Image (tube, rainbow, N blue to C red):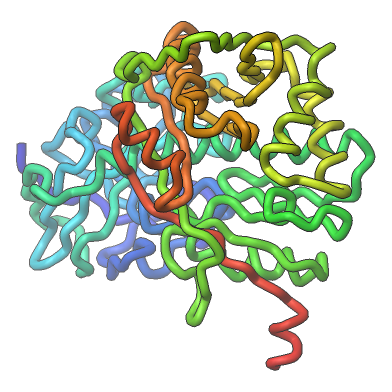
Length: 419
């Protein structure tokens, strides 16, 4: 299924992208190409957008005014059914450029003018599997020119493309879960500043000092926006933590490292504990749940009050499941499950010190995995500190390690002193 480059397209932002003869392609895409909405486009995992002329012609045949470049693809190709290629497929273009298919590109309102009635879903991979735009990473930098040949190569043996696609889903669910927590804290009257823009979400609070409420999410997909994340904390005049899978700036020091684990929702081993019952709570028991969380995790002061008030607002809300583990009628542990985008995110688990070492956490993992499967999730994901009992429990129960990440503390006051 080899083909060629029919058209090379760039723009200073927005659509249409216009044809040029050639461009250099680096880790972040084509030189001279920009995005108006840089928190949902671009970055190393979406460096290049591609769309085949074959798909364009099928969409045109349905009466839509789409043309090469009008929906923002960087490379319009010919001879290759791009959307049918497996994630990780490599494209050798011209003399040296090598790309790797990373993900389908979701349609959005920005490209609506290329479709009758603005119905950009005509190129959604969900509804029209052959006609989607596709994103690609740059494996080897190089020049691309109109007319260049494209050789389709299988995924490399050491390709991480499939794992990156899983991380895309997990990161999206994690962002939704975390922003919901921040918004519940704000609704309870605590002082917290939140910015939620596409795949970048940040929060800061001088009142709440823990990293849970002073954090930036989105670095894996948008490392080119590190300065924007740091500027947010500088404007808030509060220290903040950036979650990243590598140091986000020279000299950045990790402040606690963790591992993201994943497995299929129906593949988690059972873990029954004699005398232990696990049940999902309703709103009247919200305070009991958050009290166990705070006591088991050592949360105190304003942060403790924030968790209590947030939990009151979140119990029973869409996608959120709060569970309590009891022995002889007394609570010994709590945990949460967040279901979104067919991902079951295991969150906020805590076991009282007197109950640790007796399988309570493993039982909570198994219970939530079953609940996630019942809710239609295909994946279950969790995060645990490196070397922790939680990490050992997840591996014992069949989860595999997906990626390591860390919290990197940025203190604008310390930077100001250095400068």
